[in-house]
Amino acid sequence: MLDQLAAAIDRHCVGLGSDTKIPRLSLVAADEPIDPTGLLYEPMICFVADGAKRTTSGDLSQVAHAGEMLLTTIDLPVTVDLEKVPYRSAVMQLDGRALADLLIELDETGPATTSAAAGQVSAPMTPELVNAVTRWVELLDTPEDIRPLALRIESEVLYRLLRSSLGAILRQWSLADSATSRVRQVARWICERYTEPLSIDAIAAVAHMSPASLHRHFKAATGMSPLKYQKHLRLQAARRRLAAGDATAAQIAQAVGYVSATQFNREYRSTYGLPPGQDAARLRARLTHTRTATTRRV
Image (cartoon, rainbow, N blue to C red; front, side, top):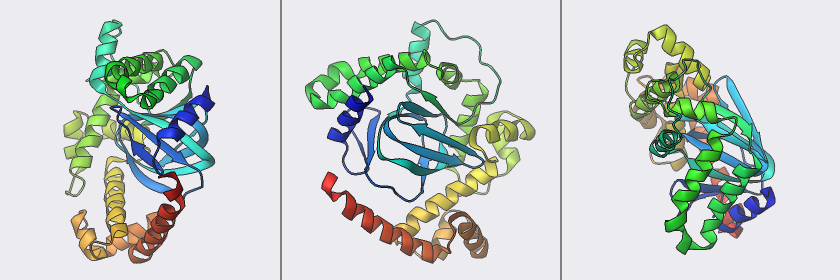
């Protein structure tokens, strides 16, 4: 069954990754190793059909192999490393409303627990779940079936997920007053304001938690403190702009919220191993090589 899913992904994935005509479904395919890449993950589930990938966030790291899934519950700046290629995965963007509606239908809307949950969790896929995800992706073979069937199969995928080992985390994720939900809301709030000066007291007020409680829950979810999370967002944004070559390092440092160019250079080098200018040149060379290597898949 995994071979069938990988083949369906291969038929419809353009380049390293692509969105599809099916809402909330994207595909990823890589035949060659790539350098570790910094990305901002949104709440989603990655179903790995072939290969393996590692994601790292702060002090936390997760590996998902073929036949496993990786759940991301919050907006999370991560470093992605493909540990085994060829790599194939289908990615579902989590729809909170669809999940909540399904829980109401199943009468599974009990009180939230207060335990802190990691922002990323990997788990094995059941055969029933692999089957449902495969049928969801294979709708791309018959585009006329997408409109009448895609939402129905997506609902089945969510149902299978609720019956998997990730079910308890997804239930907590869907509830408005759970610790997981409040951390998710705070993470999104920081993402929308990462260029601004933020204090831990202001962030804690948004979460309706004490600073100590926020720090505990936030670090359990992301592997870092809220302010370090903000710093990673700034550095990722700066790196993307440096790779595009649309401004100087000093201009970009100011645009992402740094007051001191010296501090920006120091933190950038500590994170990425090179000063901003040298790293930008390396990134542009890497992107040129990647485009050349993947044109055969376009």
